[in-house]
Amino acid sequence: MASGIATFGIAITSADTGYQLTADCISGGQVFTDTSTTFDITFGALTSYLVMPDSPMTIAVADMAVMQTTTITAIDAYGNTVKNVATTLTMSTFQANGTPAITFYTLDGVVTTTYRTWSNGALSIYWNFTTGVVNDEMMITASDDNIPAITGLSDSIKIVP
Image (cartoon, rainbow, N blue to C red; front, side):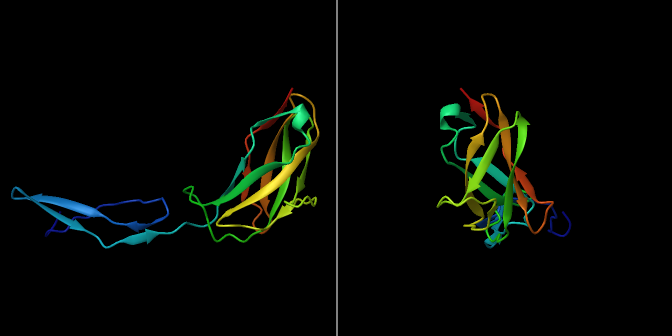
């Protein structure tokens, strides 16, 4: 501290509104407190997609044809949801074990691999297995049509008896 001014570093990585900083100083046995005005932290640039199946990570053979839902969330480098995203995603699969195949759909059942209807940084995709056997595993991949380096990959989804 020099001339009553202290310098310090701070990193706030969670996007939110209404942050305030409070500082306490002890001088001559007295505590002095000061609070900043409120300020907001906004999300950063889009860096990746979080691909989270809404269904269990295992699907019974008998349920392979049942339409499943997966939520894709646009996130920044700190894990904040990027709410103003308006890009188009192309969906594909990565076979982790075996050769399962899935078909992607719109909510009303039209076959597609591209999605562009975002709501506050998230969108839903719909899919079902079209082929596969017990112990086949696959992951869903989301690829940004505008910036191919921005992607997302789900955890493994496995077909069980």
